[in-house]
Image 1 (cartoon, rainbow, N blue to C red):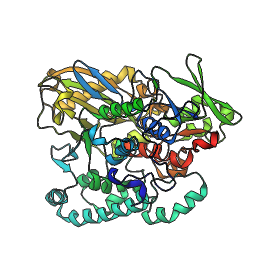
Image 2 (image 1 turned 90 degrees about the vertical axis):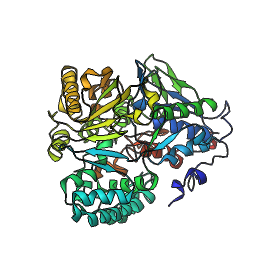
Image 3 (image 1 turned 135 degrees about the horizontal axis):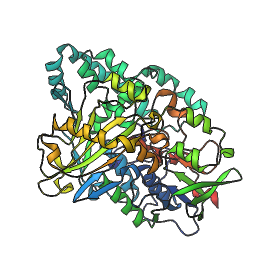
Length: 523
């Protein structure tokens, strides 16, 4: 592996990266100021790394608490993680603590999931997906003996994508066409123009097993029938490092990262939405808040949605690359409908992570991503964190969320009008499948729709993850970590390079090491 991916026991900033030698200190009053917009995982990680680099850092958050998409809702004694719940590559989180002279294990309690996910099919059968090769092969043999060898061949292909796509290209900041040209041999070897579903289908014949091995891109807003097969590397990532969940929920990780920043004297201002990035002389000179206040900065880092940042925070005359026309023409990731609910009983046979599939797969995905139509049927990701941590609900109760991948706002769906009807349909489906008598046991609930993603989180088109991660919207074609038009402006988070998902978001912050100037350059 490259130095970028060493474990926390041998953490490295990578060649040319930032040393953690200054981790115990904090920036002086004369150090250059970095303003970071947004306190999602990307923003928090960027703020930590910039602080260690020697910058003074000021964080600004639109909401009343940190986390962004990883915000935490607390109501009626229940704790609901708003967004990301699946933690892979935990050493990327560990690096942030190491940089600050701490051990992640002293702050965050991560538990390995076993199985990672249960995939329940519409006929009532299920598949437990894990990194236990024997258990995986046993299940495959039970469903389709002829696919046993195909699964082994798929793992070989996944390892190839892991080596070529993750180890060799994962931390490349694609800034020029020459960067793409250098990557072409790897892309050709991976046949990156193929979809992940087509790669899976090459090796696996049974339709249910094809779903099991191809659904991962849906967790980052992508259609398995169009997302590049490079994402097959996820199989290798999960086999190596597993799938984890945090005690206290994902919000516990956010809370501990905020404490690291507090210890480093990095202030966070909440209820402080940024409405403009001011450009002077071709460079970002600071930000304006909705109150009209101007905060001068030496560099600005946006963890906000990249399309929203370009479309709404930067005046059009300063954008030759990400014009309004180009932004509008992009293919954006799916929207998300999330029903958070607490029950006054426990459902002990429901695992931590579960996919509850509907009757259709390809047709449903076609409606979501191509037809932009809200279908009557759906598939669900059912999250039950109280399976691992009962403290997230009152005694004898369970905390859940049911997430349905839906079209983004390009569908024209009137979510305020249909939200309750859609929620009821989800409740009925769950009651008839895995949560008997659900309706009579729900005692607390709330919903989030693509409209909320646009209005509350300022996500363009209400998309959950920025541009869909197809090949022509990845790497150089995705918003760069260093803005192409405006000097001293940088992007991190799901909608910039390298992409969505907690590991990629943390990597986007790490990639700042390659593009942000040394503090000495401001002297």
